[in-house]
Length: 322
Image (cartoon, rainbow, N blue to C red; front, side, top):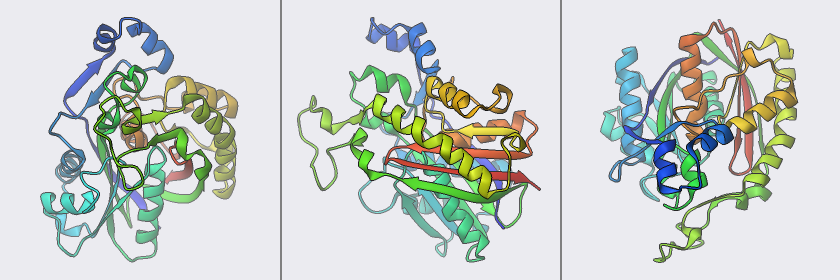
């Protein structure tokens, strides 16, 4: 068995409000942003603040807030799609900066909005198999650095953040069975086309292939078709009925999509978490941020976590309080 033991977060200091966005894009009213996507503020990293920086802060917060002995951490998984470098892995930089033992494993995984679920599946396997005792899963994303300065839609939607979760052989919430899926046919619908080895980044600042491209209608269509079945499958393999889950935490994509999915799956409002008003869509960090806040504000017994997005990829897992 493996358990989620502790979660800590780091939110960058720079706040972009709807009012600031409206000042830059007068046709993009601040109330319209709030009504359309359910976000009031989002935080972004500074010009010289990068993924390893916020990952280090999240991990240091985890260590300090929960009195964790750094020497007891024996594996580090860092989920990001905005690494500091092509190589080395950002996880290696974080290991050094935080001062973890050199006998600690450290790897990156390139995954987006389902990244927390995918990362948990790896951490769970390491602990459950008794290969490792204490695994830290970091989600750290700086999507703001992928977004063109005039892309008002993505500027309004995405925020930067980092989280750190300790997965151990003991804790309050047992990690149960996973359901995972991938359909790479949708890869071009959420992509940064230039910048890696297939297509070099160009010098043209207006070349939109240098920046994040998202086909919103295609992403919505994929999500609306894939997620109801995912939820039903994961409930079944974990032996739960829908009513057995007191708290559903989905990837916080936007409030329109969340409301659509909640109604489609027929989840009561009081059992469904929406927690993105002052964070925005922080990609792989949305679920652990919402989970941490829920642990502090709600009485939880059985939880379902659901991630979906870039790849396409999707995943779900149930947690149960012991």
